[in-house]
Amino acid sequence: QLRLVESGGGLVQPGGSLSLSCAASGVPLDYLHIGWFRQAPGKGQDWVSCISRGDGSPRYADSVKGRFTISRDNAKNTVYLQIHSLKPEDTGVYYCAADSEYNDCSGRPIEYDYWGLGTQVTVSS
Image (cartoon, rainbow, N blue to C red; front, top):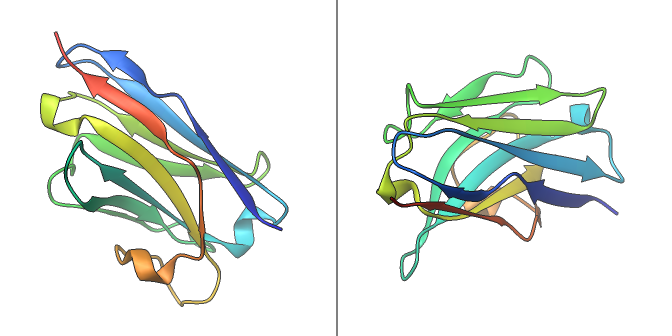
């Protein structure tokens, strides 16, 4: 059974940086597309980024392009999300999710079968 565990969240000042991790267990990471989503307080879930299995092609939501970097380390079965120039609107719970069925990663939550419990990111001075 696949299990995903996020870590690395915390309280950071605007303009700061964080590195989030998504550790997978139960299934080799190179079988999986991994997506990152976030949910701000009182709002719906938004797609942030994803990375494909195979060539590891990254994709980003327009709102985070140039500030977020997704990467994967198959040997460690972990996907990373580096976040720079944090803004208050980046506040939320960040979730990683895994898909093994589709041809590529996407921003559609429905395509992901497994989800972690999330890690809280709070951007505030």
